[in-house]
Length: 407
Image (cartoon, rainbow, N blue to C red; front, side, top):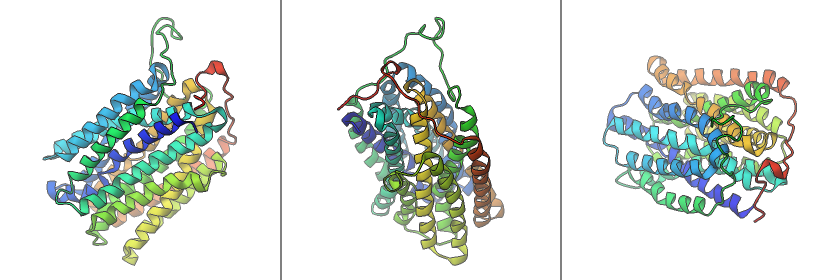
């Protein structure tokens, strides 16, 4: 990839660390602020309520006004979120921090991925999309991994992880500053008859495959991610008796971080096959989480987190590669943002799992989670796999827009 693509990747890596720091801190929030399981999962998923609409809109906006004009404010927002959460003294501040994170990630993630792909040479765009997936999965994994270690070894476990992220964001700002813009702002009357309109959603010709294959696949990915990052930490404390925050953070690192290295070991797997294997395998691996309560083994949870992380990484690898090569540059941000929106929508059911855990127990709630994940995966493979039979690359020409900076 080009130097500009790598600098954009660095910004994406650091940015994404901020939103997953909360995972090993959830048991601390529950104790300090007296939150129930349902309230904890609601706190975790709150940012989705801002991620989904923001991501759906801002991908299209970036296709018109430029990537960096969207990403810059998003980086300010995630930095403010880390500061708010670092100094949170009450529950409303916790929720305010999560809302700020949602606004930030909704504006940045799909657009940041599009910027990386934009800067890749024409024949490297599929690889660039996979590297972007690696960066944000690794960033999400480093968030809880480092936060758990920092929290376990400091007298200020809630504050210090977020302060560390604020310092890292200085590097991210510099990385974005040196990355050239790839989209020239379109005039208001360029394509809308004199009226500038925000474009959202899935590009024309992509809806059937997206609705039956990519969207539900991303939803399963998000459902698996969110459950391991929100419900499983509570499960480890309540059922398995874990008290080490670094160990809880390790689950988050394995589940998210290993997903980031999947493209390095499975680069040659065809994108369509990657989605089906990733979704199906990840759903089946969720059974290991439930079995940990019967075996009274934290090790089984760690194995499950690693397996689900690798398989979710495979799902993301295939889905982002499809989005990166199947549409022109002017619609890439919109499609990638829609993909990530569906993944984040998968966090919403975890709210129900939290409240279900209060009613029937956390182990039974995780059993329901596993059953739902397997059923959704079956839909992706049996229905979506038949509808979306082939990935057809879009062949860019110079008039389509920026095709690489050649650096």
